[in-house]
Image 1 (cartoon, rainbow, N blue to C red):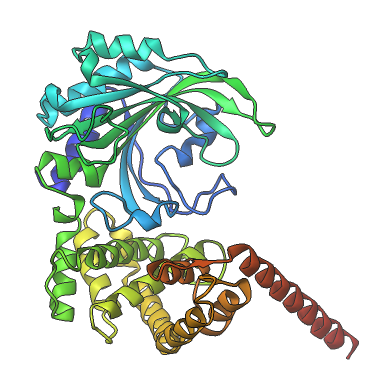
Image 2 (image 1 turned 90 degrees about the horizontal axis):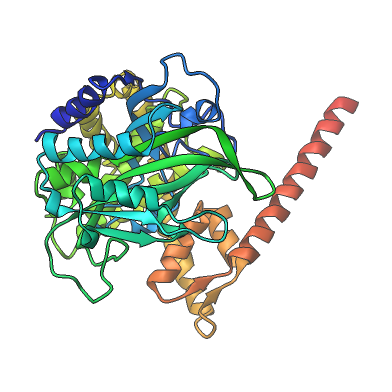
Amino acid sequence: MKVIELRRKYVEFFEERGHKVMASASLVPDNDVTVLFTTAGMHPLIPYLLGERHPFGKRLVNIQKCVRTGDIDEVGDGSHHTYFEMLGNWSLGDYFKKESITMSLEFLTEVLNIPMKNLSVTVFEGDAEVARDTETYHLWKQVGLTDSQIYYYGRKENWWGPVGLTGPCGPDTEIFYDNGNKKCCVTCGPSCSCGKYVEIWNNVFMEYNKNQDGSYSPLKQKNVDTGMGLERILRVVNGKENDYETELFYPIIEKVEELTGVKYGKENERIFRIVSDHMRAAVFILGDEKEVVPTNSEQGYILRRIIRRTIRYIKLLGNNENILVEIADKIIDMYDNAYPELGDHRTFILEKLDKEYQSFSKSLVEGLKKAEKYFKGVSETKILNGELAFRLFDTFGFPIEFTEELAQEKGYSVDVIGFELKFKEHQEKSRIGASGRFNKNVAN
């Protein structure tokens, strides 16, 4: 199944069931200052999940652009990504658990033709604050799943939200594809990382609001928020081993092969995957309507971090040329039909990538040499102190996470707290210096 067909089938399925189609919101949220990027399909809907009336009604469906950086170190495996598309449908005080579970199963088994025997689900086991979700367990039994396909897990696995520090949240039921591999151990289940189970859909039953004091109160209305990762479900439907074998990534990998002269294989697959993932994320962030650019703060810092990480990994392939622009051009062509804003911002995207490459590549080689010297100097403790980590940031533009990654590769660690203290000290000196110059100018 082609990705264009999968997107269409999903939207049409829920349209036929009374859902109104929304366009994807910006990657930079308008109504939540606690996060930098839109991290889930429900993010733009927070006011409506809290009870405000949505102009499209109570049933909604869309495909939302998302960015998550909390698990950036996992990028390079088969299924974690910095940027991804989330297929989502919502009920804003309309249907609840029964209808949500029934529709989800129908789409997976009847539209995508995934055998029910290959599905497993998880349910919230409850704790001292919220009771076990036995209703969801019985609903899955009613639609045909057996006890061996239903697993109870705690808050870590089966509680969703809030997106920020406060907001709508509740228990969820996650749907997994079981690829048929043997269980790795007696306790193997959907929470296991052995690869037997792939999470494809999450149905969140939003019943609570988390307050600033950490307590929970019932929402004015019960909502359903579902999210299915496009990359993962496309992989499952097409029987691929990992997301990078799908049409969402493999053309990017082929472009990197062409530009570097290096073939993608087991010995370098993590490097190719990181480059293709990070370049795709950078293109979408730069192509967003909010026009984020690389800086040393907030969204710009994340963007700069992933671009600079990409440059380093490209150099690990033995390439010292600027190929960012050509890779980005390929990505824009791949996604322009679904996201025309990328084509509209093509010149802006390519110019910013080229500028960042020119800025960082000059200092990267010298910075890596200096880092190597610093690591040798702390070989006994194997801890790079905060002052040295700050020098790499201040002099060579190494984000702290970048330095941490270099250290980890050598079996070292970094004094991040010490780095943060030096960074704050630097900010304070800059603030005082700027204030002094301003006052002097006023006096003159």
